[in-house]
Length: 278
Image 1 (cartoon, rainbow, N blue to C red):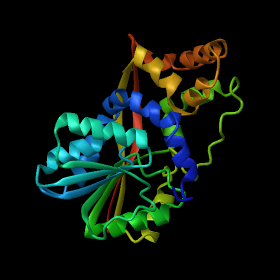
Image 2 (image 1 turned 60 degrees about the vertical axis):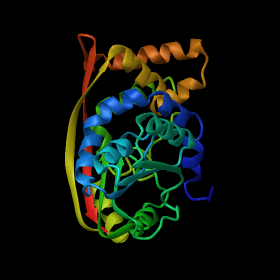
Image 3 (image 1 turned 45 degrees about the vertical axis):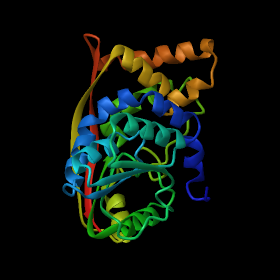
Image 4 (image 1 turned 135 degrees about the vertical axis):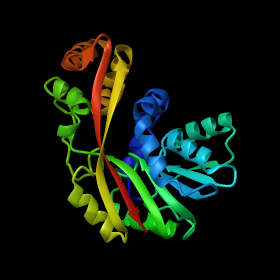
């Protein structure tokens, strides 16, 4: 693996990738409306060729492949071998000949030039070490005028559900990583000005960035799985003994109580839906 994105490669090919595979069904359910919006905006027509960036366990790739039909192709690429393996397994089970997958880094992968009509992503493009280089590489993979469509998270302050665990556990887990808002990570594209500049510098035109807000729910049992396995708190908990985990989990679940009514946690997902032309 080349040096660019080495940290992301190691992260997603260790416990983080395995956790996403195991949580795939729950995550796909919560993020389904966002995936649908990305596929709808990025669909080039029956028989088209689409690149799915940071495809994870393949939800958006498979959804797009169904829309493209047997004459089309959606190629999913992800840095995590575990996630790509899961995506390939799901594709075989679905019998979708119009879906394919490759394990690789979209920043440096040698795509065939002008090979795709569109590139899409559901939260898979915020992790590049050099996003300008990455989006330039992606643009070269598209035919002239090809469309880019992706979803990215808005500011953490607009997504309190997603940051509650880290805030609640901060005192008990003082070594949680401090988030650099512009570093590769979940909220790296929260700032519109930064995102627009990256896309312009990498050669994209007709850039449009608009808010996308989605209502989501989790049953209480799903909430426990989410907060104890996902994100920096979930990662930290995996390294602790049960006796150390218990007070942290209690504190985190108490912090989520305002979201829970009648056994269901209800919350909003605040995103950007971004489109551009190559």
